[in-house]
Structure formats: C-alpha cells, structure tokens
Length: 227
Image (cartoon, rainbow, N blue to C red):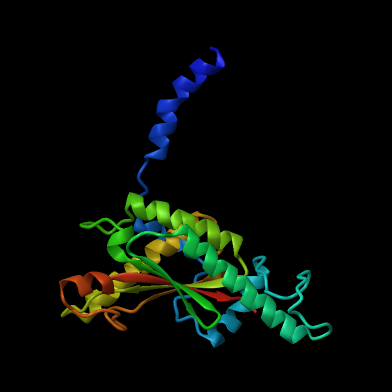
C-alpha cells in the first residue's frame, strides 16, 4: 500500500476519532480521579496547609530565580520574586484570554489571581449532566494552559440559579465542579493543586430572570500563584 492509499485509508478513522464525544466516567470512579483534591475554599491558610503535599508531588513555586528583567532590583529577592509572580500571572491571563474567545466565557483578574467564568450551558449538555463536545474542546484548551502554567493552585467552584431546595442547589453545583475536576485529572493535572467546592445559589452575578438564571449557572475556575 503506497503512502497516498495509506492516508486515504486512515482518514475516515482519524475523522471519527476527532469527532468522538467526551463522557464523564462513571460516578463510582470519581474518588480515584479526585484523590488529593481539597474539598474546601482556596483560602491563603488552605493553600499553605496544602504546600507540603503539593511540593511532594513535584509542585513548583514562582520565584525570580533564572528570570532576568530590567524591572528587577539587584539583591532584593522579595521584590524580584513579587515581580516574577505578577509577570507570570499576567502572562497566564493573556494566554487564556487569547485562547478562549467564545460566548459564555470570560477571563478576569482579582489581585494576583486569574478567574475563568464558564457559563454552564456553554460547556455542558442542555438536558443531561455531562460535558458537551464544545465544552470538551474549551476545557482541553484550558487544561493545556494549566499544565503549561503549573506553578499555581486551582479552585473549581460550581454555582446554580436560585431554587426552592437549597440542598438541590448545593448538590448540582458540586456535581458541576467535580466533573471539571475529574476532567482535569484525566488530563494529568495534579490533584494536589486542586480545591473543589459547590456554592449553590450564593454569589449571583445576574438577576433571576430567564436570561440571568442561565448566567448564574456557572463554574468559576480561580487560578492562584503558588508561593
């Protein structure tokens, strides 16, 4: 079989593989994917408590070592480390912003942290609790960037719109956050970097009309520098 015939033979298979739909693994297997995750808010105290495990898994700390810049001050390691950290997170923000330009997504700054806001319907199927093909494509992009900028902690927080049953809102929000955590784990992002929380209907970012409710159903991925 010559080279052209081999290409024509493999083309349908490659096309089929490229169109395969992602499905979250069986829920019974989630604990193994999420082993090492902290199911709590990503506070400064929580990050410091996680540092020994994070470093033990090969985690990195952002410092000025090996970074040369005219903005750095000779001999002042604290200032230089702070500059390196700010520059590192700014580059991460720009990379995310340039890579994800779709409806239902936004990239924001909060101090030195970077926050990705993902509207639920932009990454998940409408009528079932699973990641959509479009969501798979976007989360794959995010995963690759998180692996590149790996000197960071990651908080994955799920939110819902207002519902009568507060227990249901919490369960739904946690389910969304865990699905993203499982996805990242499958993409070989270390769970020692992850915090996962469900926040129910708290912290709405829009009104509770039909459009606002869709916006409030979201996942926020907060990326914080490891230091």
